[in-house]
Length: 153
Image 1 (spheres, helix red, strand yellow):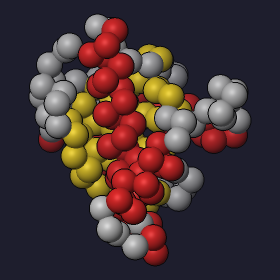
Image 2 (spheres, one colour):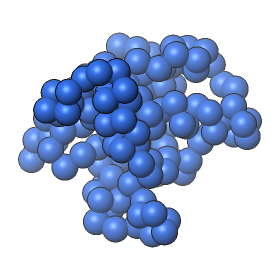
Image 3 (cartoon, rainbow, N blue to C red):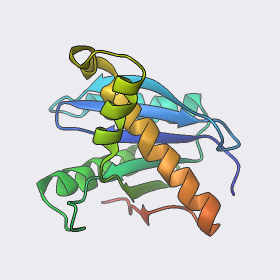
Image 4 (cartoon, one colour):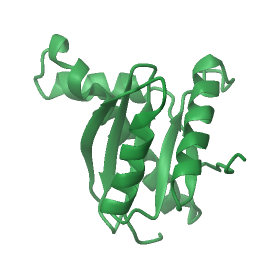
């Protein structure tokens, strides 16, 4: 297992949830929910967080269908990961995030949070789930998780 902080990103259509790990990859914490802007100004905030936390990589959730096929949401996540890759000097990886939002809602419900109060934090919790799954995959395989995003342009 590599050491170093990672950022997890749940790139929704309206909001972007962010989480970070500790340097040992043991603890994952939700850190922010950003509103997506047409011009992508929130990408600059993500780049600043990469620097602030001295992250060694960014893990972006890739929303695949239950069959494993990619649809419009996956294409959107790929574009978003490419934009992040262009803005940061660390690797950006796409990881399968099937059911991360479902898991996030379930975790919030189990914690006693009423569903109408999920919206402000569910994206952060989904980012936490995505990052935890990526770290677990790396622990199991000894390899960096997911698919490396190439910088476009």
